[in-house]
Length: 226
Image (cartoon, rainbow, N blue to C red; front, side, top):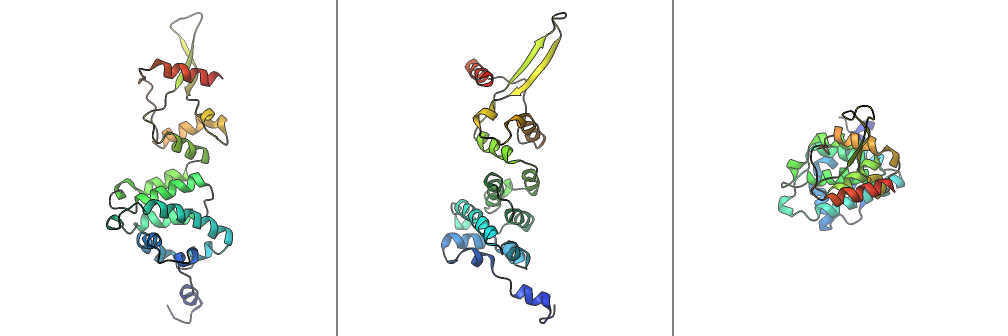
């Protein structure tokens, strides 16, 4: 590329991303960001990422996200820190320039942090990016809520035919009362949310598995009916 071409001059004048966000890039935690995202920022520095962060609002939002990422990778030992693969880092960073919802952004940040350590890189797959793409804010809240749960108890309601006692009709299914436990934007869409999480293979419905603790279902039934 010729040095006097407009494109070359624009690329040459593109600012370093970290220096756009942080004044003191010599801080150890910020240096970690530079190590993990070195290749990503080198590629992204070419015009597009700095342009996306040119507005003050975009820069503030991206700074908050980088701070959350910095907090996560600060727990990674320097010897375990790796250069994030571009196949993961570039699409995640691109999404983080325009995602404004905290719950969705946190899912991308957690995936990016997984890809930043030699110990957890095996838990980060490019497919996970597209799974997050297909999730709503409410579904992200559900995931955060059930993350440390071994199971989600649910109740199905069936009615028996008057004429044929062997005939049953399902009236309601997969009643979890999660919509009452969480601050969901659209609680009436809980069935749709759970169906989507099943289709994304994030949760699995095991209709033939039952908890021994009967009180669990009694309390769930009361919660559903209230």
